[in-house]
Length: 256
Image (cartoon, rainbow, N blue to C red):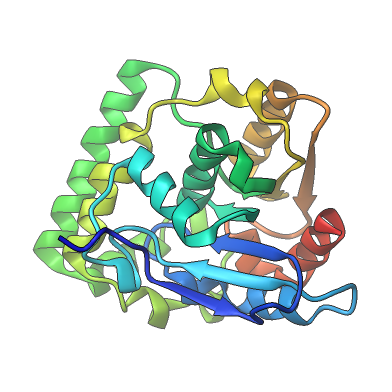
């Protein structure tokens, strides 16, 4: 059998230091294009930008992988690089960083979590994710996206920045599998392993995203002096979509 691989796009091959941009749930690597363009062409320096599709998404729609395997596939796709992950992508990047730190030269997490600490919380989240997966399989991607993007998590995300066309490229069965295999409830928590991270870490959150801003601060304390927090003014959970220029400037300065 052919080994599993993630579908990957490389922008500006050989242009400079490599950075891997990893999308969130219901997105694809194409969702990172606005941020990729700014990093590839910034005046401060050029980057080689790698944009993979996570398991169950986009060109990797047929790939089925739990969190540990997804992190391995991400490392195989990206190689030694700086890794930036948003939400689900951030959780996969974080797992890669604790499992294969030799590949992660720097880590940027946007609106990401190390997982739920309590088994009861994880069980409740698994049940909620199973309900969402069943909705996807019953209704299809478009109706699900209408409900998903109308939720409070994306209240500050303009419709023009939501990337609905890219999200519609996903399949219902792929997204349902991602919920079941890569959801927060299915993820072993990494809180106790944060102190092992030795690479520079930048924890980003939208200033209007109180939950993940607080998580970023708590994670920075657990990681130690190699971590710092930055809040993006006027942005919510999808800060890189709402304020791509500000996020790109912070990331370029951090990686520089």
